[in-house]
Image (cartoon, rainbow, N blue to C red; front, side):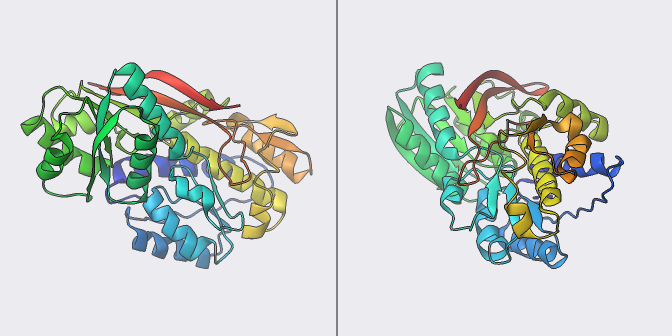
Length: 365
């Protein structure tokens, strides 16, 4: 997880969501012992590779993460797949993940950005009435793929697609390029540390009230305070928690950490929970055993267990019973590529207290 770097402000809560199932089970009497270790990707592929290698060398058969697609794709290709260790990301949304030659070792609990591009296009056309747009996207796989997905889905004119580098001192030139043709809407795809400077520059020199749509990477409740603006012209889209266990998860997260769950925290909980259950179903601490049982414990056959009954699910699996884990973020049904089959997005806005959901959109069966 990115405990430092551009994604630190959202990476730390995602990490907390990922470790919560283990903390629950450590306190339960299930007949098993539970161990976990956290590695910091620093929101950087090379640091992520090093952190993943440490976890693999320590003998862990499954890893919840990495968070960002730019890190996830390199880590999975260079570390997880060659070492036959399961990776289950709670927040890597690049469409490229779907088509990885991964021998079924790579899973994820959020949806692909191929869907989010459609959601942003729908929001722009239907909610904002936009007929022209521009995109500003972080220069990595996540930003490029999501910009491309939006451009393909948007029915209007996309006048400019402008890439930017992370954590720069100024984004004035990038904003000038994106806004040159006065688009009806501006789509910004990035992360909080860069977003703070991006929006400071926007409100200082470019604020004409243009409708701005951001994506999940910028769903940070602290953003308006850091930017120094209420950001009333900004809305966002993000995968949201809509699983049967979301209320229990929210309460458990608040009790453990004293704060509300954030973006991708429920997906992180589900990723870890499924890996643990698959590990027990496989009967051994190997990536192959976990891989072969990810769908066994999560797809719709057997008795349903949610986050509130995770310890009971462990005991049922250990007894050889057929179970179906239904999660905090979604029903957690993996397709043949390890992607989610049913997902929900939210449209959110920024408020003085953080962010609030305005609407939800469901995809899948």
